[in-house]
Image (cartoon, rainbow, N blue to C red; front, top):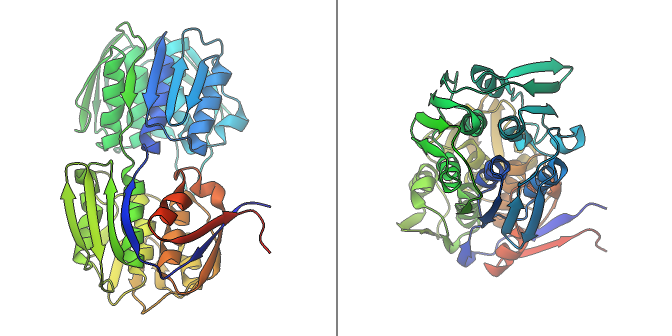
Length: 420
């Protein structure tokens, strides 16, 4: 029987919680470790299921990998393969990030289309175009990609600021001969983190965090050391949980500037928010009110990954909030489960109208994706009675020791596979 999470709501969350390393930063950094003929040490790398899938890919390629807690050592001195089996590709959406790294290191790559959460169409066309712009040849045989070619730096203009395509282009360009200028690049903090790691390996990369990234490729690389940034989406989830359940919580190990699109909404909804150098304190003593319309957008806009947990928090309160999802077509799969708990949410296409209700109640619900699962946990913490949350394999992709962290804050949370 699959694990389930039992949450008895109505208990305020008080205390401090340190967020673990960012999944969306660790995954491209692990792929980048393949580029250097040496040993890299990556710290604050949480043992999530997506991280485990990345390590399995590295081992399959012939790297030596050692994981001790949240520290990972990757020896990529002598990779022997250039293919990633379909079963490993299907484990996570971000597996496509290995395309640029494998091609850059081995001169050829074979992989299939990736898996991951079903949030609507997420084509890898921008990844392919970036590789082709650098001189790579890609053959698509029924969803199986065969890539080869000598990579040469040039100007690449992305059709939209895709995070994954920006990272894949950076990885490939580091191995390309000459200078690559990547225009309309995504600006997320995780891309800055990747740049920092690449520099520790001897690469010349500048401009990450802006819309233009310049890579001077072909430099000799060596193993690097890096500490992964704190996970801003995990931090937003904890803050949303405190807003839903009430209490006084401090989230540490994260840059408050990365959270400002979310914390500004929570402050507008009635929470007291105070930010310091590496922490955010949130106090919620009264029911939440509504907020201005929330439009998800690429960084520095409101993050799509924070939309579900924030929606869950605002489902209980006194106001009305309009959400407009501009990134994924199927990002509202958690709404039906929130309605089971008493939420008043109406969806029309990419728009969701959340009318706050006096209280939610516990229910048996099922997570259908990573952030939707987080939303169910947030709602359950603020609800009356007990909730039973299934589909924890999705949560395990992005949250490490979630139930223990919540218990430390005063929540009544139990994870178990069977229960009388």
